Length: 89
Image 1: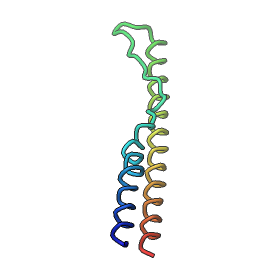
Image 2 (image 1 turned 60 degrees about the vertical axis):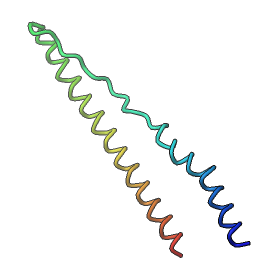
Image 3 (image 1 turned 45 degrees about the vertical axis):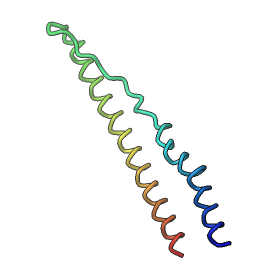
Image 4 (image 1 turned 180 degrees about the horizontal axis):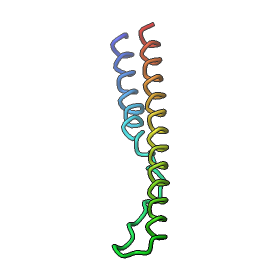
C-alpha cells in the first residue's frame, strides 16, 4: 500500500508540478527602455546633447530594471529557503 501511494505521488508531481516549473520563466518581460540612437558625426550640438540625455535616461532605466530583477531574485531565494525549511520539519 505504501509503495502504491509513493508511486502515485511521484506520478502526480512529475505530471502536474514539474511542467509548471519548467515553463515558469516564460512570462518574464524585458526592460521597457528606449535605446537611444547615435547622431551623425557632424550633427548639431543640440542633437549631441539630446543623445547624452537619452543615454543617461536609458542607463537609469536599465539600472532600475536590474534592481527590480535583483529584488525578485532575492524573493525567490527567500521562498526557496522557506520551502526547504518546511520540508525539513
